[in-house]
Image (cartoon, rainbow, N blue to C red):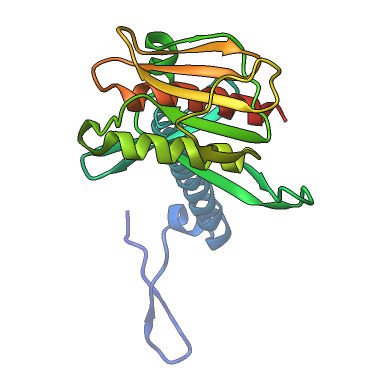
Length: 226
């Protein structure tokens, strides 16, 4: 069988004859195959990216949920400052006279409110009047915790609408015309209502932060009800 010779073109040069199998694969057919292959690769890539994004979002939400929780109607966020851990909550702050919204008031406590709710008893209900008398049987220095505890208590009562005065001679008003809070030493740390708006904050072994912050989370809950 004789070999096929290449045809000569108009210039007398040999013209290469393309095999039939290659001539059948037109540019359109090759392009269509490439498009299908690329589409498949893109679809796979999108699936992989989507899977990575879902894993990332789930991980973020899980980690975020570990640092945020709700307790007694208040939302808390765990905040770390160096070696210290604080529990932050916020609530609307309004002008005492007009009731105008002034912004969110951020408050920080040192103890986990969930643990305080379990370990520190609060006996009674909560009713804070406009005037608040704060008294103490001891100085409760407690390595500086006493100053922090009393200041935090006074600040929150002021934000809640009370007018706080420190009066060592004040006593419980049986008619409930003002709120009376007494900080005193006791064998068991806790808070007890002893009158219409009278409270004993009992402190054992200098647990003044635990005792006062147990009282604070009750105020948080009351304010969130409003």
